[in-house]
Amino acid sequence: MTYCSAVVFLEGVKPEVREGSAIEPTLPPQIPLVSDEILSNTSQVTTFDDATTQSIAAMMHQQHIRLAQLDRPPSQRSLTARNYGSAITALGSYLARLETPLPTKSVLAQWRDDLLSGRADDAGTLYAVRSVNARLAAARKLLRAVADDVTDITVKLVLNDWAKVEDAKLTVIQDKIETDYGRRLTLDSLRDLIRSIDTNTLKGLRDRALIGVMAGTGWRVSEVVALTLRDVFDTVNETGQRGIRVRNGKHNKSRIVVLNGWNSWVLQAVQAYSKAIGLTPEEHPDTVIFRGVKREKGGQYSAQGEKLSTRKVEDAVNSYAAEYTGQMVTINCHDLRRTYAKLCKQSGMSWEALRANMGHSSVTITEKYVGLDVDWSERVPNWTIEL
Figure 1 (tube, rainbow, N blue to C red):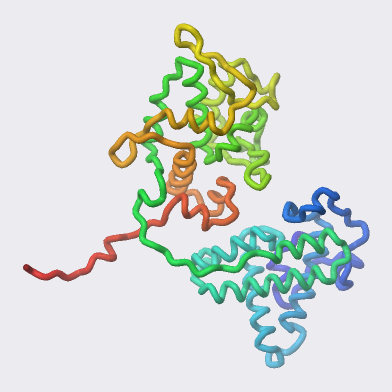
Figure 2: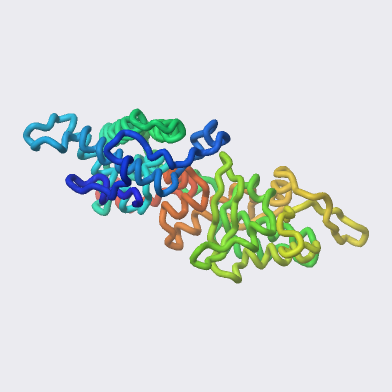
């Protein structure tokens, strides 16, 4: 059974139970242990196999009953128990909405941020910091209660790590204008930049591909320099969508950024460059794509070295200018990452999808790239004084 709040957290409804794993506070002996490597870094564990997930779900159900005193008549439940019950039920509804099986640390962090911003439910309810932290406390209590009864040391450590999600913090939203968020190019400006690059040279083909990947996927510089042909041309998800894979992103997290079709302009740019330096996905699948260039006699360029450094990528991008707020300005790599975020949000991408594509741990971070829309007209005073 998949751990789902609609089953696990609703009073009176129990999940399907494997014999010897639900009521007893132990996990089935046949559940495999996670490797010693992962055991030493439990923060890398974000999910379990089906058998383990089912057992954890059953144990959470039992702990929910205990913490919320659901085995008693409502009139006999303590205020603390009622609060626990309300918080855990809300978490269950949120998990069902995300269609995610377990309340991992990243899911709890997202829940926290969505409670603060009104995205946790369809009603758009905004919760105060204190209320959010009370709900997080209930979630921690639930995870730690299950961890206390688990005999598998790996599962115990992982659940306790998930319970370490940080509390919400009171923040003051300050007024900002467009330039306060950092440069984000418009689609027209980015299009003009891409088309201005001289692709009659190898350097131009490389730089167009570099800028295309960063602006078309939102990748970090450190991710771009490690890009291989397999990552670009052999990444297809289960629905047949083409994407580009980040194998070792920030904090060693992998992700796939879906592109807008098999004939994506990003793929075209990378293919033109890789073909020019003699690289093919069939013969060089694990070869790093981007490398240095050497200027030859006659103004032509040749490929040099096996891999570009992040500094060389930054220098290459810094050599171009784009229109921004009516002026031509030198761009940098992070401008392209912010541009990707802004353009994707303007085109209708959801906050959660954009967060995943950007590789952020929380939507709150993504919002800093996109910026908040402010209707300044509502803040104009509707009165004046004649002088």
